[in-house]
Length: 414
Image 1 (cartoon, rainbow, N blue to C red):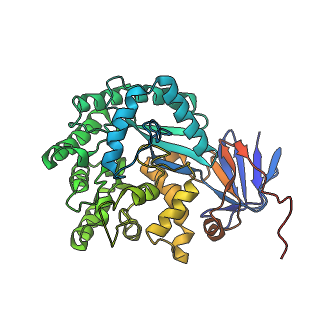
Image 2: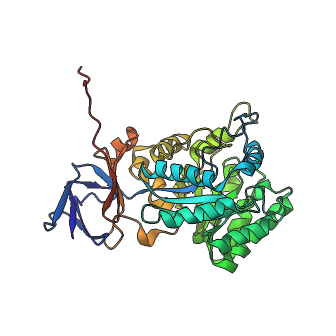
Image 3: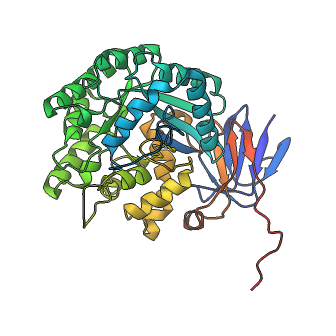
């Protein structure tokens, strides 16, 4: 049966007002399209491709208070130490319930694509087992990619390399790493080499927690970029966080941005998380802790925003609302001119899809799956200015949910 969604405003397509869907795919998009068996009025609202969250730790969610929630330094490294103890007591049932709740929280706010980093520095590989099950069980509702991620280090954790590889053999989509956590620069370099070698061996994508520190001498992204450029796999690679790149001098930064463009590497920035974690040892001026998002956009380097944490040992807040992530991100990175705002939604939609290599199945184009969201505004500018909520989410032409617009019991009259 053909469906027509009409009376809409489409992101990045000002000429279209209607979309026809058949067998879960977009078959037409434009104006004055033929009548269909079912016609759905979108009341002039803005239609976007679904939100993408390309960096989320679904095995950690809602564990922020599991050790009493005591925070001393508030740093990344304290969070890792807290998680080391917390994960010892988790059960498969607990881990699955928590992850499912977080996925529901994200999907209920318009997210349909998630990349999750699952800690494999656990001989039981409990988190990986849980996430592989959920990926299959929920595939019709949400697309999940899994990173085999050694939270306590590929080499700092005994047997970490072998556990990362086992996660890949089990079915993870990406190789992960955390070179700045290894015990010496040389070992961090070794881990980056190993990440690329494993990706080539198992034909996987790469997503590295890279330089998540204020230390400007943490420059593992330089080695990662060089190796993937040599192998021609930059577009399959994501460097997450790269906080230190916001602290390096301009001479180094601009040279590296030229090399990033040459490799095609992707960047993931986590605005709320890193604004919270970084700059902890600074007095004033205090660094924001984010990578050079504005400059990446200006240079044509792909960069996107992500949630990262939902109430875990690193970050007490978070709720999977990507509009909140976008709002914080464009403020912290000063990407908020009128011209920049017109394409700012790319940071939580198209750019994330490109990072996850989903471009063949993502977007408001004929032939693509009919996956989209409807937000409660009529223009891009007003949607961002008002931090708009999602009224509906459609997956393969079917509603995952649809809300009524908010109504006042007693309206404000001025």
